[in-house]
Amino acid sequence: MELILRNTSGQPIYEQIYGQIKAQILSGALAPGAALPSIRGLAKDLRISVITTKRAYDELEADGFLVTVAGKGSFVAEKNTDLIREEHYRQIEDHLQSAVTLGDSCGMSHAELLEMFRILLEEA
Image (cartoon, rainbow, N blue to C red; front, side, top):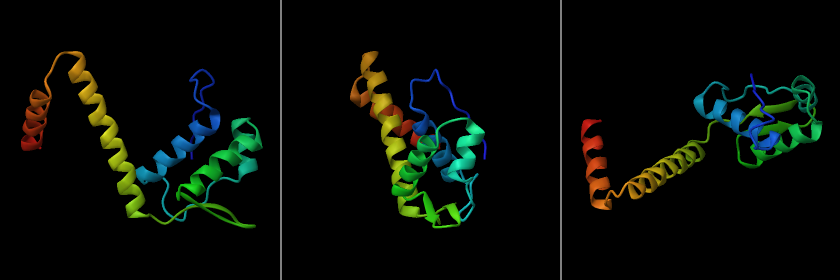
C-alpha cells in the first residue's frame, strides 16, 4: 500500500490517509480481507504520529471500510455494495453540482444544461 502525504495541501494528514486508503478500497486495489499495516508501522513508515494514523483508521472503520480484530490488526471490510453505491452517488452529485455551477457561471440555462446531459446519455 502506497500513500503520498503532502504537507502543503492544507488538508489534515489523517484525512489524506483516510482518502487514499478509501480510494484504494473502492477501486479494488485493496481487496476485501487484505491486512493493512499496523497503526504503529504505518506511522513509522510515514514519519507521523501514531495518533494521526489511529484517527484515520478509526474513521475508516466507523465508515465501514475497515474491520479491526483485537490482537490481529486491521483488515479491509468485505465489500458492502450499498456503501459503495452510496459513495458513488455522492460523487455523481458532486460532479453534477460542479456542472450546474459552471453552467450558471457562463450563462447557460438549466434547460440547455439538461439538453446537453440528455445528448451525453444518448451517446453513452
